[in-house]
Length: 110
Image (cartoon, rainbow, N blue to C red; front, side, top):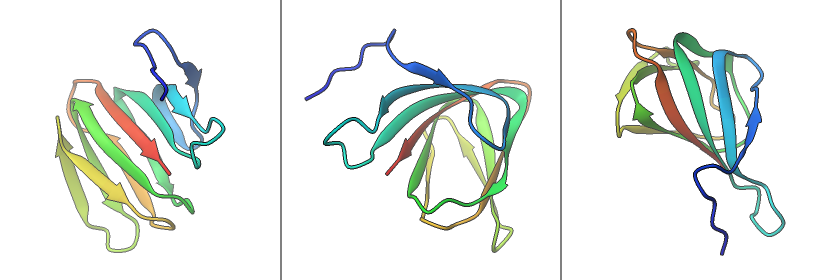
């Protein structure tokens, strides 16, 4: 077992993201099978450019509202507090913050 307290974590910047900062709460320690859990803070004009990755991702909105766009279908998904989205390996996505309230998103990567 591993406990991570609220004051623990490592700050990071994510490629192709803008007006955001993050705290990696749990990240790829020995025996975790590559699981990473982070909290990303996005300013009202923040987001992430269209990209893909060979990994599974889950975005869980803790505060605010974001729109995630599917790079293949161009479908847009509006996510509000307590909503989540699963993004499969290789799926393209972009993300933008909706409105004037900063968004806080828990990002889980496997």
